[in-house]
Image (cartoon, rainbow, N blue to C red; front, side, top):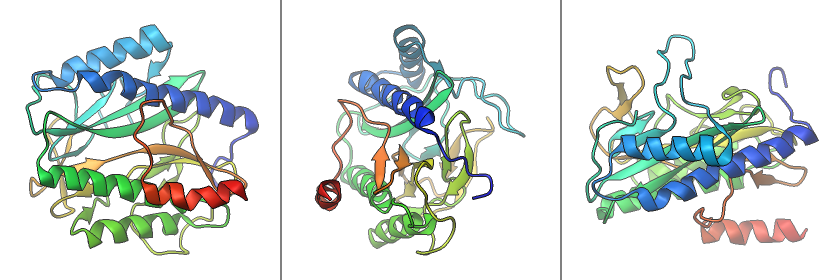
Length: 276
C-alpha cells in the first residue's frame, strides 16, 4: 500500500465522531442560507458553532499547504461559477444563486470533511439539474467502494454519469485520504478507467467529492491564491462525503440528521449487501 494509512479501530471511532460533527455544521447553517446574507456571515456563524458549541477546530483556518498563503477563513463558500475554495467575505447571496459550503472540523486530532450544495431562494432549472446530477455522481462513486475494488472504478462511474448529462469533470482537484492529517494518500480522481489505480482494502478512509461543471472542465485561479472558477464562467457544483472502506463495502462517516437522503438507486443497491 506504500503511503496509504490504514486506520485502526480507535482511528475509525475518532473519524466517525469528527465526520458527524462536520455534517452537523451543515445542518446548523442550512436555515441561514437565504437571499441577503453574506458569505462572511455564514463563515462567522459556522466558526462560532464549531468553536463554542461543538468544541471543534475549523481545519481550513490558517491552513497553508506548501506554496499557498494561509487560508483566512473557517469554511469555504463557492458560489455559482466558483469550483472550490471560495473565501467567505462581503459577497451578498441573491435569489437564484447556488453555493457549495465545505466544512472540515478537527475533533481530538481527527478530521471530518464534507460539503453540500445549497440553493439561495429559487434556483434555475440548469442549476438544479447540475446540482442533482453532481449529487448522483458522488453517490455512484461511493457505491463502488468495497474491498478489492479500485480507485479507478470510482472515477470511471462519476465521469460516465457527468458526461452523459452533458457536463464535465474538473481534473485538477480530487478526493483524498484523511485522518489525523487533512490531506493524505490516496488521491481519489473523479475520472478514469475501471480496474486502475490503488486497490481498496478495509480501513482506508478517503473523501469522494466530485466537482462537475455545466460547461467546459477548464478552470482558472483568482488573485487571492485560493478561489478556483470555471474558465468559461459556467456553473459548477460539488458534493462531498468522507467514506470508510469496511470488510463488506463502505460506511459514510459524514452523516447527520439533516443530511439529504441518498438517491433511490443507492438505497436499492445497498439493501441486499446490508442484509448479506
